[in-house]
Length: 195
Picture 1 (tube, rainbow, N blue to C red):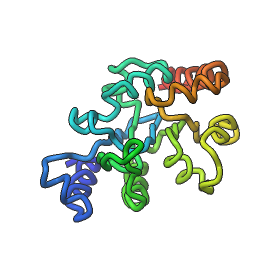
Picture 2 (cartoon, helix red, strand yellow; picture 1 turned 180 degrees about the horizontal axis):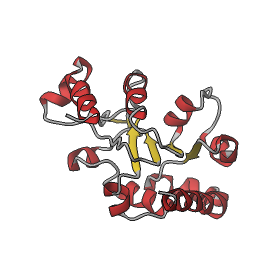
Picture 3 (tube, rainbow, N blue to C red; picture 1 turned 120 degrees about the vertical axis):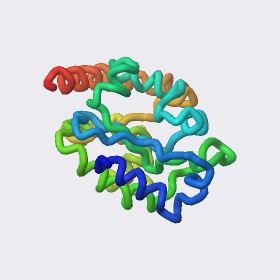
Picture 4 (cartoon, rainbow, N blue to C red; picture 1 turned 45 degrees about the vertical axis):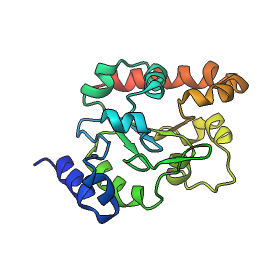
C-alpha cells in the first residue's frame, strides 16, 4: 500500500468521517510524489463528490483554463496535487455550500504535503485556504489578498474561486483577468516545462 493510500485509509477510518465512509464516499484529494503544483481549495461540491473526482465540474473547467492545462495534464500527469480544506462535501447552506470543517486541514494536510517534496507553487483557491495558509485575520478580504498576490510568491498564489457564481466579482475586478491570470499561466508553464 502506498503512503497516499495509507493516509486515505486513515481518513476513511477516522470517526469524524464515519458518515461518509458508511455511505461509500471516499475522500477527494491527490498527493502524487511527483507533484510540482498543488491546488488547495475549499471543499468538493456535491457534483464533484458524486463524480468521485475533484474539480470535475464547471469550476474545474474554468480553473484548468486559468492554469493553461488540459484535463489529461491536470488529472494524469502526476504534476498536480489537489487538496481542499475538507475532502468531503460539507452540505448546503442558505447562500451556497457550508464551510469546510475547521479541524480537517490541520489534521491531514501536513501528512499529505510531506508526500510531495518537489512542489514549486501552491495555489490557494478561495478565502478559507488563504486565511489558513497565510495566517490571515478574517477582516482581510479575498479581493485584497488576490490583488496583492505577488506578496505571497513564490510559494503561494492566491486565487478567487473559479465558480460561475464569481462572474460578477470578475466583472468588477478586471485586473484579475488582465494581470493575475496571465502571470499564473506563465508561472505554471515554466514549472511544468522544468520537469
